[in-house]
Length: 91
Image (cartoon, rainbow, N blue to C red; front, side, top):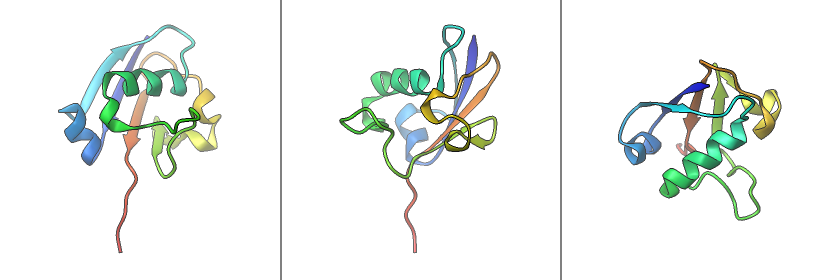
């Protein structure tokens, strides 16, 4: 299945573009996709040492935060869009 990956802020700079398309096995979940990204782009530092998602990252599947679906176990389907936002600080 093909997934569209969208990157924002410093993640866009790390990847070198706003959108990537990647093929994954049917039944892949958000965790599978994010782990593959982490291997391809280690500077993104998506996971803590205990394999949990870094705090304050926002991951959206088709515009909906995966934390409100099934977290890293959110199943993806062909054509889904996964948006990856880094932690944001401000004042």
